[in-house]
Image (cartoon, rainbow, N blue to C red; front, side, top):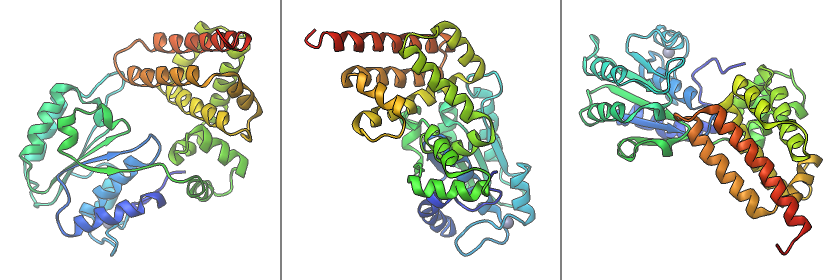
Length: 337
Ligand SMILES: [Zn+2]
C-alpha cells in the first residue's frame, strides 16, 4: 500500500511544479529542507526529487519515469550517487563521523559528472557537531551535489542550518483530498468510516493513516483513547499504563496524545462532534486547564525525541492528566474557587 512510483502525492503537486521548474533550469538549491508533519509524504517527495535528478526519461512535468536503470537504482536505494543518513537502531542522533564521511563523499565528483544526492532523515537528529560539519559542506558546495534535509520538527534545527536551506514546506492535505487518496490507495479494502477514523487518528496525515490501517495501529490507538477515558473516571493505573506505552511506541503515543488533545479542543468548540465520549469529556474541562495540558504535551513531544527517560515523560503526562481532571472536578463543584 505504498506509492510505487516517483509521482508527487496529489497535495504536493503545486510544490512539485516549483521544484521541477528550478530543476529543469538547473537552479535547484544545493541544500533543501523538506519540512512538514509526520505522514505528509516528505520522504516520498525527497525520492521524487532524487529520481528526477538522475532519470534518463523524465516526463515534461519533470517527474522521473520510474522504469529506467537510474530510477530502479533509486528504488532499491543502490544508486552510486545516493547517500542516506539516518539514526541507527538504538542510537539517539546521527554521529559526527557519519556526517564527515558523507561530506567527503559529496566533495568527490562522480566519474560521469552526474548529480549526487544525500538525504538526511530526520535532519533534527543531527547534533551540534554534526550540524557544524554539515554547514561547511553547505557553504562550499561541490557542483552537482544536493542535500535533502527531511524534518517534521524544523523548529528543532539550529537556525544557522535552517537559514541556509531552501525550504520546501509540505502540509497535510485537506480532509477530502486525503480521504480520496486513501480510498484509491487502499483499493476498497476499507469502508469510509474506517478511512475517516484512521485519518482522524493520524491527525490528518494520509501516509500515517495508511500505516495505521496496514498495522493494528487503529486498534492500538483506540486502546490509548480508552485508557485516557478510563483514567478520567478513576479507573486504571498510570504507572502500568506508561509501561505498556513504552513497550509499544512511546514517541508515537505522545504524538497521538497531542493530536487527541487537538480533537478534544475541537470537540469543546463544536457541540456536534461525532464522538459522544470525547464531547462529554471536553465539556467537563475548563479551557485554561486544557490549554495548559496541551502545552505540557507539546514539551513532552520535544523531550521524548531527546535524551529524556521515556517512561518518566509518559508517566508524568498520565499523572498530569489525572491531576487535570481532579482540578476540573473541583472547579465544577466550586466555580468561584
Ligand atoms: Zn527514469
